[in-house]
Structure formats: structure tokens, C-alpha cells
Image (tube, rainbow over all chains, first blue to last red; front, side):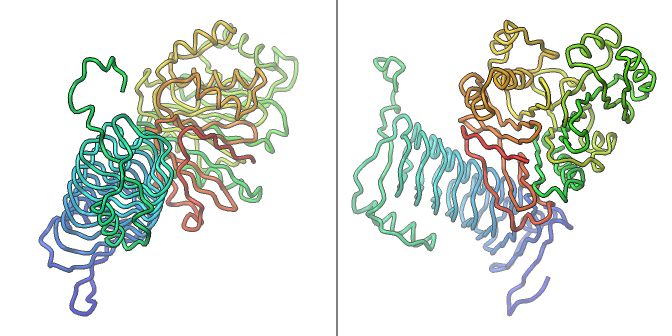
Length: 233
Length: 298
């Protein structure tokens, strides 16, 4: 531990301490504003999972699966790429990835903000439950599958079946959408959408023209069983 | 789960590093597949273009010298032998079909792991770290290698059902995932006279792709056809005499990451298996896209 000004800075070299020591520390009672630096992540799983204090966590390098999962209040930055399920089931706080994210980024996240500066792989925002996700690059196929609540802003392109079986989450895409999933449709951008995009770009510290985005939301035709549909959706 | 690893050394000066660099990759992926492990290593330079065979005996102690003498008696020529425990590599003037027939008649307990001018295959049950120690993977050299750590889903945990699977010559495949139509593929291939050694689904994928190559497809063509014919979840890593290839199905439920530098191309299920590689901090890292065919040449 070192002191930087008045704030404490804790350094965990997880190659030496292991991930469990880091997470146990994060689950303890931490002073607000504490700064934690994680060195040599080496793609290990479950780094900084379950943090629940208003602290800043910097992961220096590539993280493995589930980094910053179940996050509450903490501001986590991964200076590198992340594996599957970054910020899965996040409740609040923020998670930023400076590189690319593998599959299922932000899965089932309830709240908070996930920013991926690079691309996100398949199933980004699967079953999203209220968080905001901003992707600087493109997302892979089946993104926002069954997303229930929250917003996903995609500055690049989207793969196949975007928003399949979407509930009430809203997706904004600047680039090309390879295909929409069942029950997802493009809708006109209203004033509320333009301000939502502006707000998300500002929160992610990214620039862009809100009017260059398309809105994708649910047709809501799968909400009720339609016996006439003949299994065609 | 299962883990896959592959490494192709671009710089011929560094080929002695194949084992030292690949072994920690395989051991790290032991977390994804702790039951059995295997490795196919390609070293065309060492064999001098001569055909060699890798063999596996059921017990660790095996009289390979007696086997080599019997092989010499059979061929009337010299047989060279290199052995370690239950694993041996022989070079003999014997065509693959002849050797298989002879083994079946005289040595039914021996399992032919591979045939070809570059390939040598090791596979056995046990944690990947123990398999790696058992066969001294760290001492292996060559141009490229393909490895696998297994968590069985489709068939029993036995050495012959561990990966890599081989077919024909200088061809192997490792697989993370599950093929849904292996029996359909298998029936089709059996009609074409192709024999199977196990009931494992990955063997069907291996034999299908190798069959397409023999039918005249190039590697890319054979892999494109496997995207149409093989149903299920897969990340395949394939080794041939001079190439490494990777293919993920369109749903990409099974992971893969690749790292490329001027010295090597490394592929694994997860980044943590690549974290120790020299120069990894400057490597070009990417996730292979679903449905895309990736190949790298020696």
C-alpha cells in the first residue's frame, strides 16, 4: 500500500497474490475513493468480482472471464482486453474496457455503465436488465438477445440477429446491421432518442452525431402467443 | 468444456522453443479439460521426409525393441525406433495400409496414433500437466503443434478417445464442442470405405475433413464444406504437414483467441494460456470470427 496525496492506493500483483486475495479485500469495508491497482492479470478469471464500495479499480493488462461481475458502485477500468461475461450482472457503478471484449459482455446487467472501447463479440448485452452499454466498435451476432431493460449504444456495426426476442431494452446502432432478430425492428429516432444517445456518448467520453444512429426496439409481437402464426416469426 | 491450443513457429531459428512455449499453454488449459490430454507435433525437418508412425501401447512398460525387430523381420529392411514408456515412433519401409493390417493381426493391443512425414502424436488420460511430464512435452521441437485438454461429453475417457484425432497422413484435428450429427457423417464415410477407431464425435469431423482433402478439396474448401455438413458446436484446430487451421461454427459457443507476432502464431481457448508467451504484450490479438476459415503456413 502506498499513499498518493490523501488517498490510499493499494496494489495487487495477482500473479503473486492470486485473485481470491484481491476479491476478499474488495468485499471488505473500504474507504470511499480508495484506489486499487491490479497488476499482471494474465487473463485470470473473476478479477474484481463483487466489488461493492465506491472505489476506483485499474486492471493493468488483459483480464479473463467475468471481470467486474456483479459490480456495485466501483469504477473499474481494464487497460486491455477481457474474456467472456465482463460486468455480468453488474448492479451499479461503471466498467470500462480499453481493448476488445469477448462474448456475453454485460450479460444480465441490472444497472451501471459498461463501456467497451473496441469491439464486443457475440451476445453482447444478452438478457440485459437495465444497465447501459456503450461499444466503441462493432458487436457480434445475437447481441441484445432477450434484453429486457436498459440501453445499448453501438458505434460500429452489428452482426446477425440483433435484438432477437427483445423486450423493453433499446438499441442504437450507427453502422450496418447485418440482420435483425425475431421481433426486433428499426424505429424512427425521436427527440428522446437523440438525447439518450447524446447522454450515453457523453457518459462514455466518446464523440459522435446522435442523428447518425438508428433505433432498434421490440415489435412486441412475441409478447402474446399467437396461434395463427404457424411457428413463423 | 475442453481446451485447445496451437502454436506455429514462423522463425526456423526458434523451433526448439515449440515444446517450452506450448507446454505451459496446454497445462493452463488443464482447467478446461482435466481428464486427458494430447499433442500432435509436426517436424518435417527431423524426419528428412521419411514416413514415420507413432504408436501407443496399453501399459507403460513395453518391449519396443522386440516390436522393432519383428517389424524388421516383416519388412526385410531397417527399422528405426525412438520410444518413451508406452509411446514409440518408428520409421519403416511399410505403407500405412500394410502396417495397419499387420498390427491388427499381430499386435492388436497397439494403437496407431499417427502416420506421416512430419507428424508425431501423443495422447493419454490424466491431468494435462501429468501427461506433459510423462511424455516430456517441454523437450519437443518442431514447426507447429496442436494440443487438447479434454472434459469428456460424447464418449468414454480412454487414451484412444483423447484428442488429437488423426486420419490419413500428416493430418490431425482437435475439437472443443459437440457435433450433433456424427453418426450421419460416419455412415456416409463408412459407405466410402473409411474405418473408424472410436465412437467419438470429433473423430467424425476429423475423418470428414481428411476425406474431403483426399477427394481433391483444398484445406479451405474442405473446411467450408464442413461448415455445411457438420452440425453442432465447434472450435476446430487442424494441423497438416505445413499448416495450422482454425474454424468456429456460426454460433461460436466455444471460445478461441489468436496471437500473432513476427516469431509465432498462437491459438488457444482463452488468453490466460497465452499470457506467458514472449512478446505477447506486443502481439496482434484477435478473436477468430464465427464461420470464418483461418489458416497459417509454416
